[in-house]
Amino acid sequence: MAMSKPVETPKEDIRTRVTRVETRLDAILQFVATKEDLAKLEGKMDARFAEQDRKMAVGFAEQAVARGEAQSRMIKTLIGTACTLAATNTAVMAFLLRVM
Image (cartoon, rainbow, N blue to C red; front, side, top):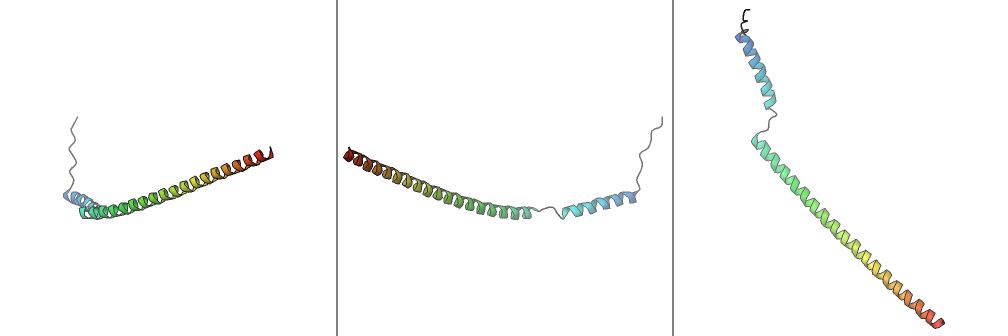
């Protein structure tokens, strides 16, 4: 059994292949971000996250205030209802004691 020799590629074929690879790399490299691009993006993202954090904090504070106001109204309503029931109970008892 005879050993086959590796196929030799002519220099022009290799140059053509290298040229194609370089062309593809050049096309890809135009979309690759530099460290400066990444630093700018990081700064923009930090600013936007900080703004969102501030908006969330304000929203949570407003919700807490609204919840506190709602609880305050509820407590006032319960106290008013309890006082009204006590006054009504006293009036009914006084009426019943006079009638009997």
